[in-house]
Length: 422
Image 1 (cartoon, rainbow, N blue to C red):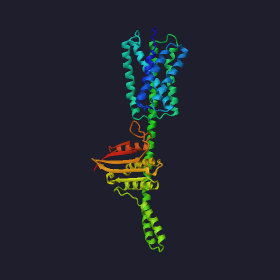
Image 2: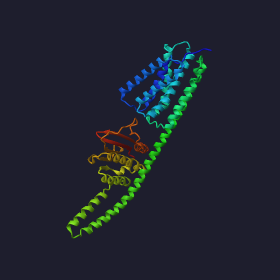
Image 3: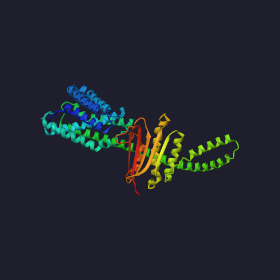
Image 4: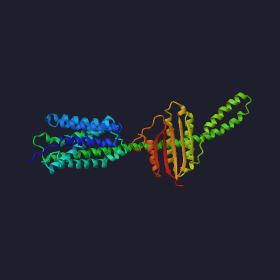
């Protein structure tokens, strides 16, 4: 029986560091590029130095040393990525098992090809480069590329406990045979690699389940937004019909008041009633009845809450869209704008501008609201947890359109660009 050497400690340190780097490049970073580079280099140096210095400790100290190494990985993930402690723990469990698999596979191939060569040999280093590049490149392409497009983990306490338990179980089973003297044989290496691979696959499946659960939550939130917008449209349409009747009645009352003999009471009553009529007749005439209803309801709301709302819109440009999609795009955008400006204590800064017009064969819907604090955008260019904006984007994409948002000179600007079928 040939006793084979175990994985060089620097190989393990590099594997653990690279597994953490996958999360670093896929999730939002806590600091800027310079600080992130310093944290990354420091983490690599810390892992390499610690594992190298503890390579000759007695077996009883092996588990505590591995726990410290995992702690270093956790610290690296928490400092480098803009995640919560729970999310950092979940990422750490996944990164640790992935690192164990990559290091085990590489060293198993090394011992199979060159059992007498050391880890510092040129061929060994080339194999290290090839295996690590293959493993981490494949994992990034298969799993982390999607995480980068939507960097929301959605880790629940149950998911964290499950991931940590599976990582500990895989690590214990894969390394159990190494606790016996003279156990480092090729068959033991096979077992370790296969068990680590199983751990990686199980945790990958769990990550897929978390992603699906998060997508279902987002879908439910988007459906709620759609339902709420349509309900608001129905209520607004009924309210406007009532307002129109009231306006007609008020005009008749004005005629009666003009016959009042007391000039003072007559003038006061007229001023009051005409003011009310002006408010309730703040009805937009864009040429599209659905858009008219939404804009009129929002105009009334803005008057009541001291919001300066201006709109220039050609409603005929939206005639190709059904009621539900107009409510989703226009209603959601105006709701978001009003919610934003209502947080401003100075009523003079509560400004909303809306425009709908044709531009080079497209229909442009532009919504702007004053915003003293720039809205943070995620890697997808959307506000975090902005289910309303994502719902608008989904509606626009049905027509081949796009939704873009950005901050400019204390203004939050949302633009919807749709192909003009006319």
